[in-house]
Length: 280
Image (cartoon, rainbow, N blue to C red):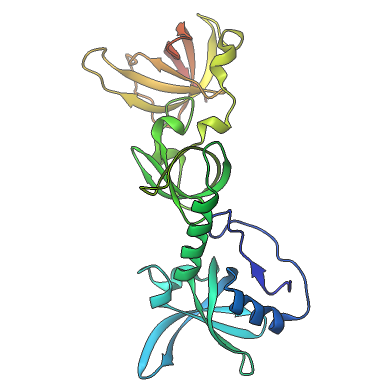
């Protein structure tokens, strides 16, 4: 395979980093790629207004495959986002039409994503570990692309401790996820990031002691009228301590602090404590 022609990994989200294979015969490979509808990948380099047939002029993303200029029309892009956002970004596509004598191609991203999603659904099973890329972050969790399929990561499956998703994740971030539920009939997938982490509660008594003092990071607040709530502080192991409200200044999310452990309940996976001071 030519270093200029890159086959996409159907098991990975679009844009997952990888290296091209090498081969000098580009045109025969392109002809084969079109006939077999291979999913290819390339990097957007420019945006042009192009007449792609008849009297219709359309905005197109340019993807250079060696000296061959490939046009991705907006109508084939599977998005309404301005195509300039794909400049210097890796995209996946199949070849729709080509004129190799004149060094031109029309490519289709929408069809490529459909083929990737189909391949993913055919092979997706619970318990698999899959590469993923964050697409959407909400307070309820994260939606991530796993090979053309959106997987939901519930908030509790993001970490062993308390975190605010919007503070910890951003679109485009790459993750490795464990698939925990697959509903092929309703096209729903749930995944876990927490399952890829060591469970700190298995040896919590070896890690922490009541009245011990430990460094942590403030990750959020709990406003609970029944218990009074408190401040969540994540320790190095990934577990959270719910600390009482301080009498003086309220620490901000992201602040490093020293906490004293007041109680440990391994069965309920809960720790309580008190913030002693900030870490300068």
